[in-house]
Structures are given as C-alpha cells and as structure tokens.
Image 1 (tube, rainbow over the protein chains, first blue to last red):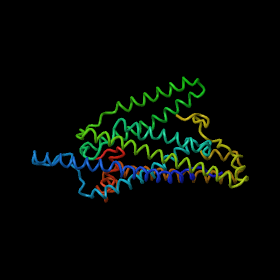
Image 2: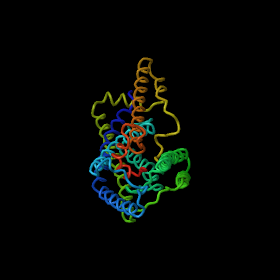
Image 3: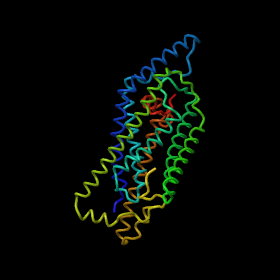
Image 4: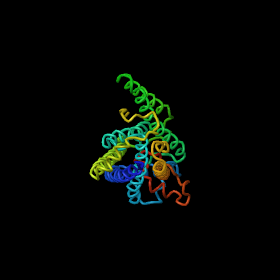
Amino acid sequence: MPSPVLPLLGRGLVAGAAAGLAAGLFSLLLAEPLMDRAIRAEEKRSAAQEHARGMHGTAQHHEELFARSTQHAGLVVTAVVAGLAVGVLFAVAYALVHRRDPRAAPWPRALVFAGAAFAAVSLLPGLRYPANPPGVGDSATVGERQALWLASVAIGVLGMFLVRQVYVRLSARAAPVRQIGAALTGVAVLAALFLLPDNPDPVPVDAELLWDFRVLSVASHALLWAVLAAVFGGLGLRAVRGGAARGVIAGARAAGVPSRPGAAPGTSPTAPPP
Amino acid sequence: MSLHSAASHTDGAAAKAATVQTRDWLVASAAVIVALIALYAVFVDNGSLISATGGYLHEFAHDGRHLFGAPCH
C-alpha cells in the first residue's frame, strides 16, 4: 500500500498556489493603495525631518532598488511562493496528524485543519504583533523584531498542538472537563504570547490607515487559509470519488488495509479536532 | 514509523511497501525543507541567505512582508 503522503503533497501544492494567488490578487487590489499612501506619507515625514535636521531620518525606505510597480508585482509573487510553501507544510502536517486514516473525511478535516492553522500561524501572531504598513520599522531593530515575530509564530503553532493534545488526552472525560481543559490551555498560550516583549518601534501612521491596513492583512491571511482549505478539501473529495469509481478491486484492497498498525499513539482518528 | 507497518505482510511485499513508505516520507521531508527555505527567503532574509541578491530579494518581497505581518526594515 503506497503512502498517502505524496497525493496529499500534490493537493497541498495546488491548493497553496491557488490560495497564494487569491490572497495576492486580493491584497493587490485592496491593500496596495494603502501601502502606496503609507509610503507617500513616510516620504513626506522623512523629507520634513531631513529639512528640520539637515540629515536623513533613520526610518527611511530603501526603495530605490525597485519601482513601486515592481514591488506590486512582487506582492503577488511573494504571496504565491508563500502559498506554495504553506501548502506543502499544510499537507505534510495533515498527513502526520491523520496518518492512521488519511483518506477519511477530507472536506471537514481540511476546513478544521486550516482553521486551526489560521489561528496558530496568522491570528495569534497577528494579535501580538499586528502588521504595520510600509514606513514603520527601524532597520536597527529588524533582527529583534524578527526574533519576536518568529517566537510568536512558534508559540502559536506549539500552542495549537498543545490545545489539541489536551483535548485528545481528555477524550475519555466528560465534555465540560475536556472543553475547559482545552480552553485553559488556550488561555495559557495567549498569556505566553503576551509575555513576549512589545514591538520596540514607534508607529507614526494615521490611525485610520493603520486600522484598515491591519484588517486587510488579517483578511488576506484568512482568504489564503480559506482558499487553501476549500481546494485541498475539494481535491480530497474528488480523489475519494475517483478512487471509488476506479474499481472494486482497488477499493477492496484499500479497505483490507484500513490503517497502519505502526502509527504512533497519542492521536486518535476518532478524536475531535481542537 | 512507516517501517513497522511492514510487520504484518509477507516479506517481499512488506519490504517493498516499507521502501515506498520510506521514499515517500523522504520526498515529503525534502519538500518541507524546501518550503521552509522559501518562507525564510521571502519573509525573514535580509540579504544574508543569498548574498548575491543583496537587498533585492528583500525589496521584491517588501510589500508581501508588510502585508503578511513579517517584520521589515
């Protein structure tokens, strides 16, 4: 029986490319006007600073390398590359978590898995370190901010895993026990997230622009995960139907080997998702 | 983990299945590594990963970084 990881990987790549393209085009249409406005405002600010001090400000941009139009295209390319990479990680994580029964319930599992991934990778880090438009960010602190941001992503992913583990481990207990257990774990994860030091940079941006940009940032993340889930789950459904249509023999053989006996304990296929 | 699944099969088929499993998971691991490098290049690198690209990679991905919340200069 061949491993199901490669078909999942293929689905992850297709779903990731579609998701990245959707998020890239969405943000090209809606977020780029804001970023252009933010850059114009920043240029005004640094020009005023320069004028006042007779020198360059520290927060100025190095945008001389590329024209803005190239950076607009770069946004879409970046989103597609990120989508492909996220699709691969999604597929492999999915294959690992559902390794006992990788073909079952592709649609609801894809939705739940992508929802959990959105919370872990996008929402939680985004709550702690909300996205900032261009013009915010001191190059002197970029290393520190990257370390903090990566830590927040790591806490998000580990935290989501922990919440699921708690929920699964408590599966024999009454519903209130395991739900409160999972919720308390979630609160502990949030606390850990907010124990991280604050973003050290000032945010000298118009409040309305800042809010709109952050909402669009979260919306782009959400769109990416939603499209990823829909395409991944849809392709999974199609594979199940295709497999059923291809013949009784193959189906019977697959049914004769329902699960891999060597699968590690700790994750039960019947356990509800986090 | 995939090697254990071979235990219940006949020797030849089991060995083959185990080989296929191992190969597939190796492919998956390679894909994960490539994906992580791609994410690093797009969202974290500041010109140090591929020094030949200098700041170009960073600047090309500039808007994507800001949009997705990755720290930028």
